[in-house]
Amino acid sequence: LRAVEQNRYVIRSTNTGISAFIAPDGVVYNSTSLFEDAVILDKAGLIDVRTLYYELYWVVNFVLIFGVVSALFIHYIKRKRRFVK
Image (cartoon, rainbow, N blue to C red; front, top):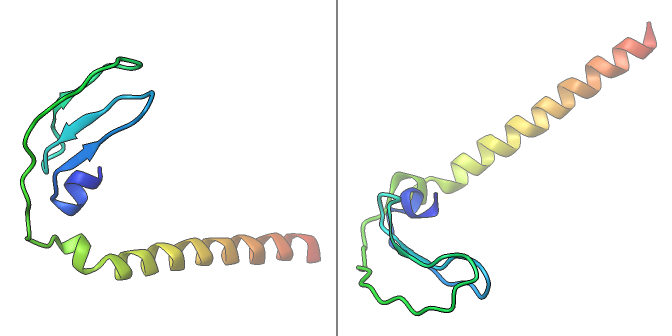
């Protein structure tokens, strides 16, 4: 998800899990199996193009937070009215 979101190569390295190279389009093009002792070598490019999400992440986060807070507020008001009657 992060590779597609940021349009970047992602190189994931873990101790006990699956290590992988992920392309900017989300395709895993080299990986290891679970609990496998291995070394994988591949190429990952550097990309300097910024995605729309990268430029507007604060707007997306504000809208999400505002939506969650609004939903909680509406739920609280409806619940409070139910007990008042």
